Image (cartoon, rainbow, N blue to C red; front, top):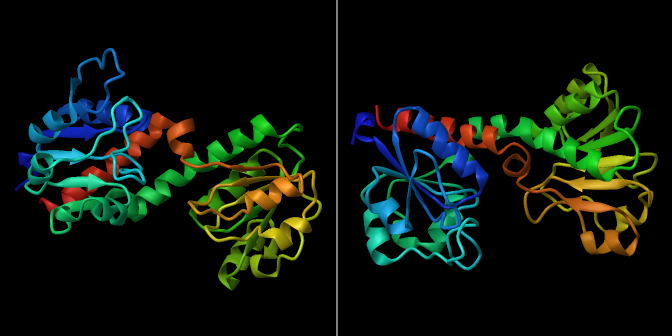
Length: 291
């Protein structure tokens, strides 16, 4: 298959991100068939179909983020139906490029596709980098909606200095917050200090005192019962880490700490940007693989 052979994309399920993804692909002069969007009354110039039609009549198929639920069904929030891939659809997918989020979970649900051309777009480095900005902005929006004060002048702790942590700290500073960043690596400490933030060692966190808002980006249980016991009860914690997350929410509730799990923020707060990021990443994969 060549890149020029891919002229029709089947987009299966998902939230508003997938709708903006579909529009962005359509604007690129490719045909799009939406499958698993039964609740939509209209989709403009896009073709609405059932999942089977979208799979069979497309040259490439894009599944949502996440692609599958715990019960193996496809993630289709715009449909009242529970959608499982059948043998006909799986056989069709084996003959074309398939783009998914979290490939391991997808293959675990449908092991028949282990040797198919299944590409994980959310595993790409550019996808993670591009998604860091809407995630950071979504985290700030979450804080603004829940925190009873203003961000300006507030004391914020950002746990983790990865892609999201870097942009989030910069965004908070731009809003005149007092920013402290916790990290583990010497290189990160050097950058944190060079950028003018206060620094803490994540491994040495024994208490969290004097902060209004804490943003956790580390997908590891940082805020366990012991640390939460030594966290100010008026501190709000926003957990941005992927599941299982970095906060013991049961313990937080016990200690009357306002803790919120904020997942999939790009899809909730910036679906247009998130959809375009998926398109950019998928098109980059096609460019690399199908020259």
